[in-house]
Image 1 (tube, helix red, strand yellow):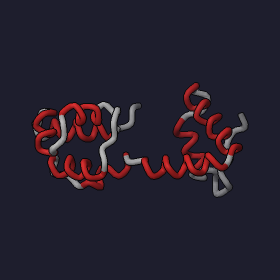
Image 2 (tube, one colour):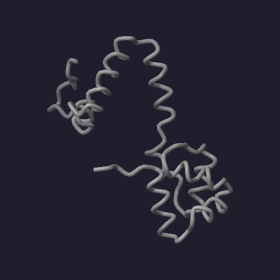
Image 3 (cartoon, rainbow, N blue to C red):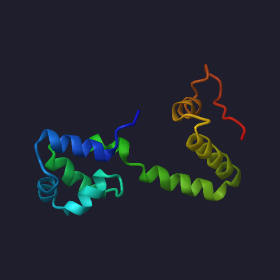
Image 4 (cartoon, rainbow, N blue to C red):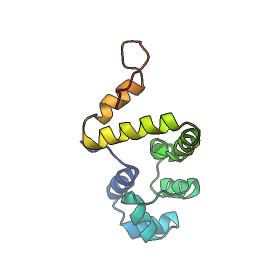
Length: 125
């Protein structure tokens, strides 16, 4: 089952308000091409643009917080740059998820410690 993306959230809210892509872009003071790319998941708006889109859709900007992974990605890049073993382990996990030998739900359960109170363990690759 596909999980909702930021683009889905914007598109669904825009549809609920009967706004065209161009209407929302005008209200949010962004180009319709940029907004189209955001809805397609090809681009990510700045905090300022997110606030403008949220205001135009009459929704709290916090509704987008779960989709903003920029700081996490920066932190991971810094961590991985200094830890080659972690880079290899993470690469193996991504490969396993992409090939279907590990599901995202299984990975999340292991990382969050859903192992009966024991330390989470990851499969050896």
